[in-house]
Amino acid sequence: MRKYLTLTGLMLLTTNITWAEFKLPDLGNPADRVLSADDEQRYRQSIREQMFQFNFVMTDPVVASYIHYLGYRLAAFSDKPEQTFDFFMVPANFINAAAYPGGLVVVYSGLFLETDTESELAGVLAHEIAHVNQRHISRMMAKQQKSTAPILLGMLAAIAAAQSSSSSDAPIAIAASVSAIQQQLAINFTRYHEYEADRVGINTLYNAGLNPEGMATFFGKLMQKNRVDPRYQLPEYLRTHPLSVNRVTEARNRLQNFSPAPVRESHMYAYVKERLRVLTADEFTDLNAYYQGALSQETGSVNALLYGRALHEFTSNKFRQALDTLALIEPQGGTRHVVDLLEIQVWSQLDPVVTKDKIDALLAWSPDNDTVLETTARVLMQYKDLDYVDQAISHLRKLVVKHPHNPHYYDLLSIAYYNALKPTQSGEAMARKEHLMGRNYRAVRILKNLRKNEDLDYYQTAEINALIARYEPLITERERQQEIAADRGIGR
Ligand SMILES: [Zn+2]
Image (cartoon, rainbow, N blue to C red):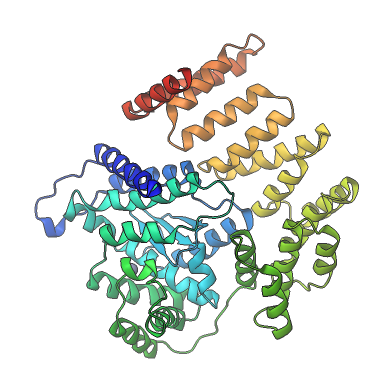
């Protein structure tokens, strides 16, 4: 009961906050109302900040880069290729995916694990991309004025609350309470929007070289599952995207419009799926039994299953066993670096010299891959040797230059600088991270503390002052009040 109250309280809080900051322009005729492009971008930024604040974005480099890659592969073949997107994976066991105005698409790990092919997953992404490009949510928000946006954020807040109230590091598993809230408040796309997103999305799927059947197959499977076993909880996805037999049939009928074309699914899909399976498993999942069964029946890609088993062995501290399993993998088409990186992570627990040699070898042929840069940086910064830590810093600096809006890389950079005994740089990276998460009050406080240090040189002082001047005007009254209240709470 207490948990439920906490969730509700947080939701109300979020509701008030959101609508204080999003003023919708009145565009006259309600039917034509849509958020302006600027409002959409502000909205997207705010959701992104909150997702990072609530630790709601899966930052695992293999998972994050895959979902980014697949999303952009599709977006490039959509009817609006110039639209920019964030594609995030949420580590929660819900069958759900959602699109936010301005180009933010999230997929829950539970939905990914429910798909059987890359084309099925891509079908869901293509459908969400279509909701963004057709500005469906924008239209609904503009039309309903006060009801829609808080619900989207309320969902985030509910999950964050449940997450913070759970003592374990296990992924969020609170389907029941969130579903109860969703049931009361769920926004439903109109039937017309659903048909439109299917129609547009299926073209995107086909044009991107994926199997256009993927969408109908996956939706059909959700419907089937729901019908066969009434105890099976209605997937969240079906609540927000009403699905009917007609819709599935119509999606199937559309397939006749496409002439057969070669399907180019990546090998990476199966690896990422096994990675998600291991990283998001709860305490009730018997991964040993799963891999034993799947490998003996050879269901799916054997190489990917071996990868999953090796990752499970690594996370269970069975390092030698993990190396034996890794040796059995024959990587294909673009998956080698992922296997090599896991091998490096295992070796980092056994032998620093072998680890460093393997890192150098991998960087020699893959110097600019984001996943390689981040994973090797994380390994290198564990060591006390300052040369190793310096190399980690140089990798992370490359990443923040490539992705200047991603607070996760600044977080890692801040830790690496701290390990390298460079507190000023560490604090500055921390301030930039807070800024990117919408917490400018905290960012300025960190910077003002750094400025008190008498050892700063001229350039450091100038840089800190410049950041303060940039962030200070962005502080909202809400954040100021919250931080002041939090400070008082600590002081008492
Ligand atoms: Zn939909």
